[in-house]
Length: 254
Ligand code: G
Ligand code: G
Ligand code: MN
Ligand code: NA
Image 1: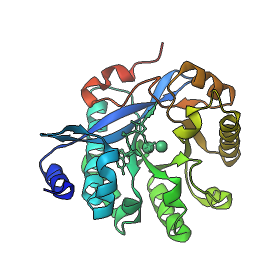
Image 2: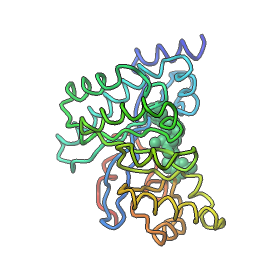
Image 3: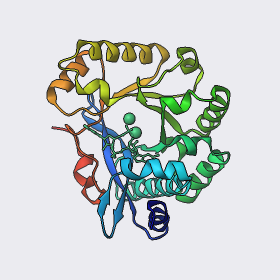
Image 4: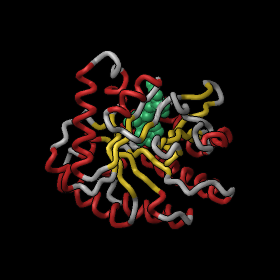
């Protein structure tokens, strides 16, 4: 069997699952959202990371059914958490380039929100900078439609692509997620600190939220806070966890 065939069976056979990683609002010491990250539980190979199968799914088009499953499952899980009395939090879902370009994306989003009974404002879509900077006119129309529904938009891996700042201004996005590549060597590379400072300043002047990804150490956190960053995500706070372990994630930080 090719990986493609096995992935096809995995979708139908219920072998995909989601892990969740909290987004942290540091000044308030709270969790301010959850990012859903897909995994594949293969009966023979165990848990397969998305890095191994998302690129193949993207190439073959299987990302479309995978992505629809991810959206529906993330919203279903969020509703379950709400019914258990957890705080109302938005759930963040990654959209691949091919998913974003789907003609019927907006209809699909509408349908899944309706089916899961979730308000649009509790869904945040993460789209990479590189995806957004292709086909600017089409991108802007689509973002306008999605934002008009009330769905929030975050630019993922920000700083790794080539954003035109004038387009950035005209896109109805809410958040920039600073790529973890800039956070990794922050303690030793002053140029990374300069880049993060620039991104935070840019976001602030455009009225956007920023979140720093891949925060692993207290030292990185201190530097980022010093640069004016208030929202974080990374192993320092929590790894992506299966929903059954997400209990502890919701509690306020010490
Ligand atoms: O969870 P992990 O760090 O291994 O994810 C690796 C990559 O896979 C990241 O770039 C992440 O954005 C991507 N990814 C994880 N889950 C999804 C998903 O549901 N859809 C898409 N398109 N990409 C995902
Ligand atoms: O491309 P995107 O930002 O969606 O990818 C998120 C990926 O980053 C997930 O696969 C997640 O497992 C991973 N990740 C989350 N926090 C950390 C971290 O602190 N360090 C590292 N190295 N990876 C992280
Ligand atoms: Mn992401
Ligand atoms: Na990212």
